[in-house]
Length: 226
Length: 226
DNA sequence: GGCGAAATAATACGTTTGGGTGATTTTATT
DNA sequence: AATAAAATCACCCAAACGTATTATTTCGCC
Image 1 (tube, helix red, strand yellow):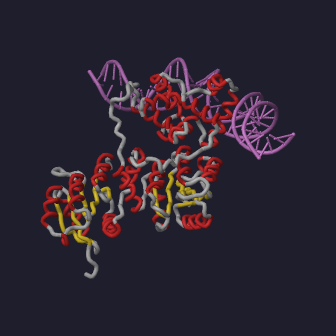
Image 2 (tube, each protein chain N blue to C red):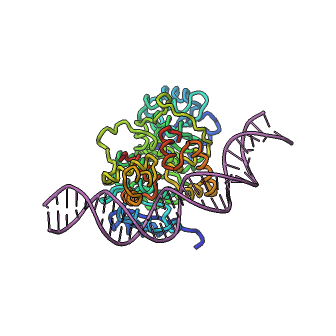
Image 3 (cartoon, rainbow over the protein chains, first blue to last red):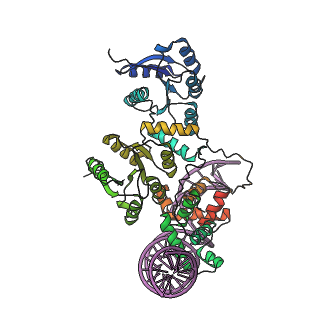
């Protein structure tokens, strides 16, 4: 063989799975399964006993395991062997698990029911470019998580926060709207005609590209232009 | 033609790109490009002028644009048309841009040099299952971002926050209301009658002691019972 | 003095919402 | 099996809202 195969390790507590994956992955030209382990401890033990050249470059790591689960294993493994790529395999797309695994340093995240050819592609990609393969459902979850997350480093640089160029009056009226006042109530409070408030709101909607109070509130609060 | 094609929109400020993508995507059996826009404003205007059945289900959105960039366009678009999927296209995998786009509500993120067949696959997947396609390099970035991120843990303490005892369904509907959906839109989304949504909202109002959407939003966000 | 941008206001029309009342069906819980 | 609590849906009515168009007034500013 001219092309050196990618050495791969498999960690799964069900021996049936280990066999299945080993068989199927070895079927590929580009991959050689060089290690199988039954849990996190087993995996770390074996890694310690191998020396560098034989060590797997990519680990398929089952997330749910009895003894020492995939997350803990990755956490330890990443520190000991930073160049080894960890590809998590899971049946569930559970938010917490995904987040934990990512924080632990997982390099990719696939659902177990993924086609074997996809998994092979991901392993190759991971070992060649270090990029992160991800099942779409997982990607969706990470996006959801990111959307809820707050990145600490957002000091000043990023205040992208679009300027919708609302006038003072418009801002005032928008604020009252967010406070739950109706046209009439705002009109009374500002000694204006209800029609005027309505007109202002219409202008505001145009500027914010929305079509209702609720939507305007959403945009306004999200961009803190109140 | 038996299979209904997926209506797709393209937003890019370079006319050359619009033409290129239109041509290539229309080549696919499953896709029909039904709209092209030169920037965010143009896109929103065109969307407003179309009614539901003709509207694109998936938008290919260029991130870097002169007039109103892809991020702002997604932010507004997602609120106005929550069911439309936005697939961001970019040449750079710039951290901040990615994060901004995700927070704005992008559904997927691809590099522009992706193969056209990949893009087509992603569009189909996105429209069928709503899952998130992502170029591996982008996925890598989101993982890096997530690793640095802190998920806001809402402990206890600071707020009195009394319990309004909303049912699960009520909470769900309240959440959608806060997201700017009308009765009708919520009804469609949950496969219920508009009257049912109205009834739920009425019950919610009673429980929160309010009389309008805006007020309900205020109470709900203040007590973060969403 | 006049130009332009906000602010003010009216009118008109169709749609959405809020309020009330009542009824049927599901889904727990005992 | 009996009951209670949610969830579902319908109908009516009036008020509030969203959109469009047009017009007058005010105010800063060159």
